[in-house]
Length: 116
Image 1 (cartoon, one colour):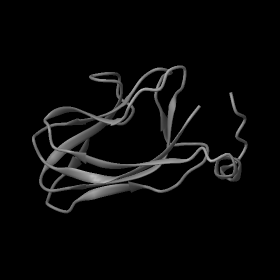
Image 2 (cartoon, helix red, strand yellow):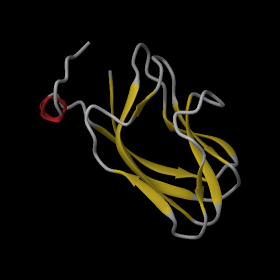
Image 3 (cartoon, one colour):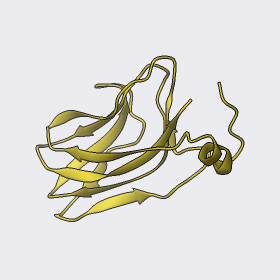
Image 4 (cartoon, one colour):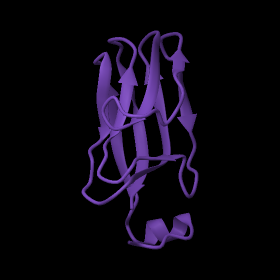
């Protein structure tokens, strides 16, 4: 396992990963697939909603909540988790990062993370 003591270590190791977020299915939407033997650690993200919907980040499909329920109440509403080291939230090892939607509303954004 790598030993990252600051964000510069992550950059120098090429460990930072990015992914687009796009989901619209009521219920479970995979943000980052599980990686064998590793946790997913979220450095930052933003979400924008195309309408009113409740969202929650989870440790796996229908897994334990990593955040409380966040109510996005209008088209264009959203939130930002600015870059933070060591990280905002993390999954268990071997577990995907899930976005649970309370309705069929398009959610878009981006996530920055690393695996450890």
